[in-house]
Image (cartoon, rainbow, N blue to C red; front, side, top):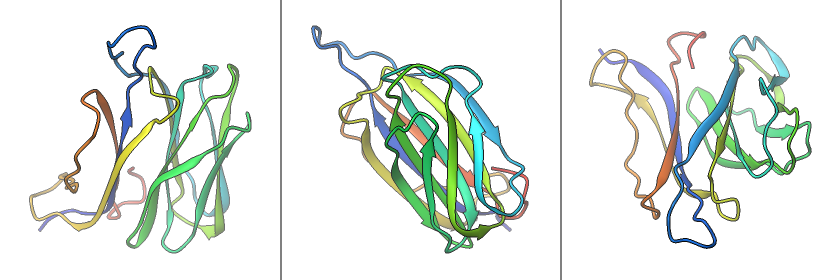
Amino acid sequence: AGIDTSNSNGFAINSKTAATSPTVNTITRVQHAANLGGGTGTSLVQAYSSNVTAGNLLVAAINGEAGVTQTCSDSQGNTWTTGISEDDGYRTAICYAIAGSTGANTVTVTYGASSAFRRLVVVEYNNVDTADPFDVAAGGNGTSSVGTDTVLSPANTTTNPKTLVFGLAFNKQTSTTF
């Protein structure tokens, strides 16, 4: 009997190449924070634990009820884009933005209707290609026949040899994991 992971989404993020050199910098995680106690409502917020840095990539991994749309915004007014969104009993999505300024920042997910099972994880990365951070996306859903605690993800081919792959899985057998 496998574990029903509902949705497993991921996308690849392009690393930044220095303007004066053909070298590629390593993408590194700067910080992350989570709000996993969402209950039911029409929005969910999570602040970054320290100031975000201008030019860094901001990522929001979100969850909510099936059929309920989700949009991301933040207190700095950055432009957020949905990289991928999947719906199979629950809706999971990954949104991203480039930080326009250095300072405190709080991400808000707004749901199109009251939604249960709300979860929000925010992550900041540096050394990302700010002009074109998004590479490719893949999403899947269903039951794993491999075994307990196994998440299956569809194959995807990146176009950049130095790429960060960001993934998200939600276990719909329990309301407390993300």
